[in-house]
Length: 277
Image (cartoon, rainbow, N blue to C red; front, side, top):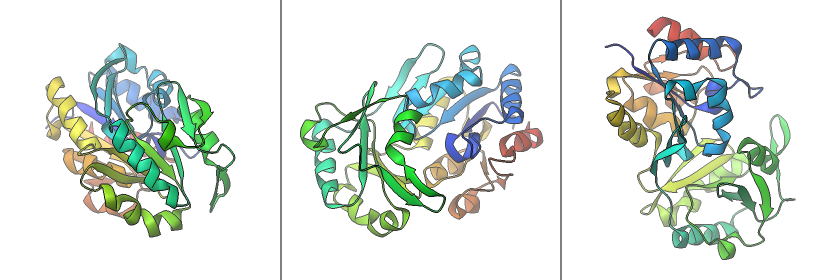
C-alpha cells in the first residue's frame, strides 16, 4: 500500500546530536511533501518548541501537523488551529507535583509563554557527556521565558498538557515506578529519554492521537510510515503500517520495528524514505 503520511519524533530522530536537521533529511522531507505526502511531527516537546522546525521543513505550505506533549495536543501548523487538546486537571496536577517533592527530581511545567520550576539553580544533571543544565536546555528548546515558583503545587492555577520531570538516569530508573504508582489509574507516564519521565492525561500517547488525526485526513495506519528512537515512540511505531527505528533507538523499539535505519547523525530518515517511497 502506498505511503501517504510520514510521522517522526524530533529529538534523536529528526534532529542530529547537534540539534539540527541535516540538509539531506530536510531535502527528502520537503520533496515528499511536494509529492503530496502529509508530514507530521510527533514529540514530547511543547508546541512552541516544534514550530521553528516545522517552518524549516516548510510544513505551513503543505498542511503539516504537530503532535506535541506526546500527543496531548494536535495542531495544524499553517493555521495554528488546535484540532485536539487534552490536559491533566489542575487538581490532579497539584497532587502529582506535591507527590514529587519527596523525590530528587526537577519538575518542569509550562503555559503558552512561561516554563515554571521550583528553583532555577537546581538545574544540573550529571550525564555521561558531562554536566548539563537541563532547565536552560528545556526552556530554550520550548521557546519559553523562565519563571521560578518555589512551590509549583501551591502556585499552579491552570490545567497542564504535561508534567515533565528530569533526573539522573540511574535514579529515575530506580524510582520511576514509585513516582508513577499513585497515579497509574489517572494519568499516563513514560520515559522520553533516560533523564526524562513525563506525565500526560490518561490514555494519551502518540499512537492514539495519530489515529484521530489520520482519520480526519482520510489516511489509514497502513498508509503511514513512522520514525522514532525512544520509549515514547513505541505505540507510534507499533500502530503505523511501517515503523522505522533509528540505529540509535532503544532496543525495545528496534524489537517491534519494521526496519532499523541509520542513526539520526547519518541521515537515517532520508535513507529509509529512499527505500520506501
